[in-house]
Image (cartoon, rainbow, N blue to C red; front, side, top):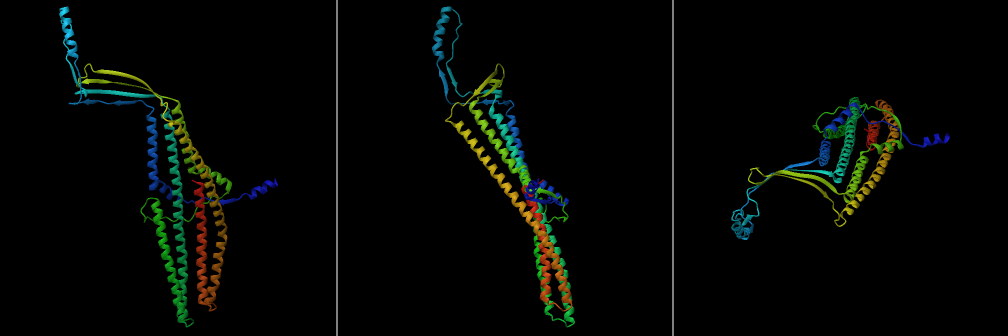
Length: 448
């Protein structure tokens, strides 16, 4: 029992929650609906679905209406002196029998190309046994499954990109708040120095120095404004909206803390990641391709068919009807070992995909491990970052009090103020870094 407890203690666990909020989730759903890349994937899926329908259609009888009408002039002729050969004999027979039973026959002189000839017919063909049709349908279904998995891969990427863009947008807003609060403090500091100068307690250089700090802060705010507009434009781009559309800020994220071991999320990633499903579907398609080639080399293709219609000179249809029935078999007995090569080629393709699957599984587990430990490390830095902000603010209060009482110099005051800004920005950066790391872990695990 003690050994079991020790073993469980050695297994790394992590309390984490999926990065989510009602506003963010609404943006994600809007992006999944409107993203142009996903719309292109929908077209690819629609094409794959039509390929399945085409493959199914090969099981049905094929009925064709094919009328033709031929007009010809000149060209080769079929000449045969049948009259010259038979007419003397017929004449002799008529004299001997004293009758006209044996008529005179014209010599044959016909165009080989038929003139004023029509062939109006219906043809049908039905496959009784065709392994190509059966396995082609299985292959097309596997390709459809792979295409659907590819779309879900892109959905996971879009979800992650929207989450990252939204967090970056919120991060710029928080930085702006920090700068705005600091500007208020520095503006009051300018006023304080003006009073000190007016009371001849300090010289004008303290005013210039304080105003310079305000101008530096304004420059940082301008940079942050640029970053905010960039994040806003990119987020709207992902949702296929106008780049200037306002973004709703929601800084309250829904946390559902759970104890999760790295082994659990590694296993979960193998189940969730659609790259695995895509490769498995392609492997299944390769297996069907192998079976298709094997069956094609061993079994013939059998079909029944027929033709009915009218055929003759001129569109009269009188005494021109005909009907033909067929049963056929095709079997390529030998073609330079082509079938053997095709079977081997399909097997190589399958082996290649299976090797790729093994590689991707290991890559996914590596990604999960990296994201897991990066999140764990980021979470460990947050308490110290918060503590740093508290201490920097306390230090500033002490320096501010001393400066107002003439016990601290200007440089000391400005350094304390800059340390407050730096500490707050560092805390904000750490907090959002944790959220960004959570988003990455959600991505590699494919949390939906």
